[in-house]
Image 1 (cartoon, rainbow, N blue to C red):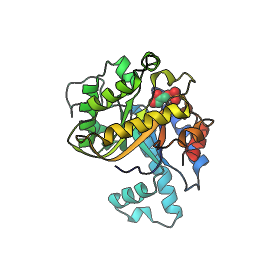
Image 2: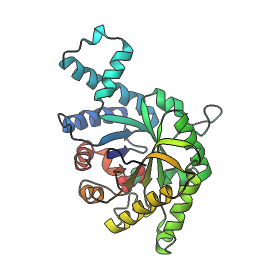
Image 3: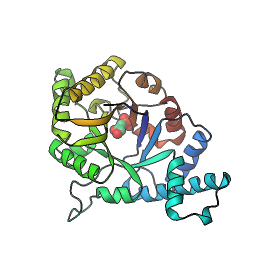
Amino acid sequence: MTQNKNIIIANWKMNHSFDATEEWLKSFNKEIEGNNNLPEIVLCPPAILIDYCDELLLGGELEILESKGNNIEELEESQIDKLATDIRKVHLGGQDCGYDEKGAFTGDIAANMLHDAGCKYVILGHSERRKNHFESDEIVQKKIVTALKNKLVPILCIGESLELREENKYLDFIKSQILSSIPKNIEIEQLIIAYEPIWSIGTGKIPSKDQISEMADFIVGEIKNNKDLKINGLRILYGGSTNSQNTAEIMSVNNVSGMLVGGASLKAKEFAQMAVLAK
Ligand code: 13P
């Protein structure tokens, strides 16, 4: 189980228009221009904006390739894709996907659609979906299987309520979320687990460094000690009320490889500052 490169993920939730997206990407790219010492950066916009983001990102990449002397018109599409992917600094992710490959699921989006639109990642089991769309661990597990089949890296969200924390039942709860959400006995190349305590999401309340550390160590331990879970690359993220002021402290926690950012990711400059600090 190896920990690879740090990663910072923007979860825009149900925010931003097409215009705001273009502005955001312009401003974000300006902020990180020339900086080659960055963590992996992932943007998860609403589904309707994914293809647009991919197009805007590709436009910027082609400009860079041309400025480096590549004659784009002479290249085949697959070569252009490869070159652009190699220099891509912002990767895309979905905020959810269906558990079936296709079919009569009004309003849902299939994993292969996300992949085709340029996604590498997908957030699954976010507490807002668990609460508002009644998603159980069993459903989340089916979604992880489908995401993996479609070459998407799942970002599994787990986290306890304030009540469970106060009753000191939070570790048992997290253990049950891990055991019921992660598919067993299948080889998983990469899995990201975002620990997002529900009481911290959008509230400005943040667990202490020790509390985050306890949880990150606990998650790693539970996964390592379970023979049925076969995960080659595991990364643990923290999410909930993160911003540029608390990034450095969170990133200094052992076993934390990144952050899943909500509100603060809506502002390009703020998110760029966080990305630089998350390296
Ligand atoms: P906030 O960063 O707005 O607290 O949201 C966290 C979150 O839910 C990210 O998925």
